[in-house]
Image 1 (cartoon, helix red, strand yellow):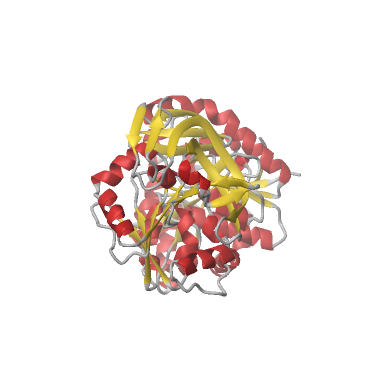
Image 2 (cartoon, rainbow, N blue to C red; image 1 turned 90 degrees about the horizontal axis):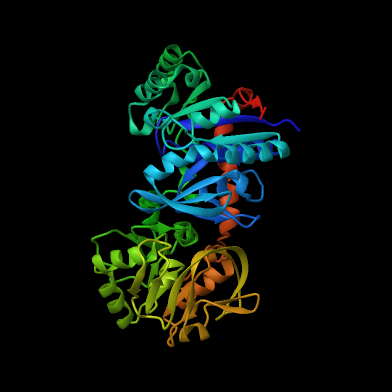
Length: 489
């Protein structure tokens, strides 16, 4: 099989590359094609566990779902998971290989091109199309040397590029034309077309803009693609997506701490989909709302650093007051670790070696361990016995008396912990609220009447179909797909 490949790059971050690729994957799948998403290098603390036992960025997981494909590590061979302001955990083919500063990684990344090309070739051998997503801005020419994410990969693999600009943020003509002006001629030659995204209003008003872009770049300008109103119903890779107006409906407040290193925050999406729930992301410096029925401490990429962050915001005091007032608290993954008596990192796996006092609301202790647990799990809720489909993605071993009252069971073995009164809970299971029956039962215990007809997974699939239809309606997809070239690597 000879696959054809096309790469979607952006004039900047958050121009809609991930959503465009997801929509194109579903459009091709709906046409009967075998298609796979691919992102050579991603940076995100929102990740998903793959069928082959690794992890990839959440955007590629959504794109794989759009393509109706199982997740595999080849879809995102290099994943950077920020641990501090100037450093990240480096994940290659789904496995952590090191933690590096930004400068160390830039010196190292050139060695990873063979891994990236091998992963790309694997997908090309099994599919009709491979749709590639770039990262950040295509015009970061200061970072071009040994680049994996954008033109470095495109040149190595010979993949043509569609350059996407975001009209919503303004200056789209300058950003598109300016990209052509600053990139090297050999990179510029790979750009087969441009695309204007997130348009509001009458598209015909941009006819002259399209003409100008095409005239100044020498390639067709596609679109404009109007803003897709269903974007907020799809799992997001950037936590900023949780801070929009979609989170502001419902009468019952569930407060979520906006940790400095928040991770896997798509755990919250099914709760946000419930019409009776208002998920409030508590920003640094803000108090936890007193009316919150439940406080969630989400996953963290650096548990001990975020414990310090929680205390710096005064949230430890707010949580204690919330519990005294009869409220409930749920810690997920790193949040579960924080709720215990202590978190120790003797080997310095997540940062400086040492031990931190936990919040002390669960009788458990955690010791960080170099082995990262990455597993898709079929679990049961300990209270109701209802099924939970989730995944483990964590480092650390947690033990203590409250594990005798588990949150759930995995293959019959206890998982997580609950306090004696059941109001403080901790679990390593990500993705637990996507299980509709469990979510409804869990919310009922908090006095929340959930939507009995809400099928979260079906809603995501329906939104992906709507996204594909949106692109079909506003783009000439036959012309766009014709830009793809056969893979030669």
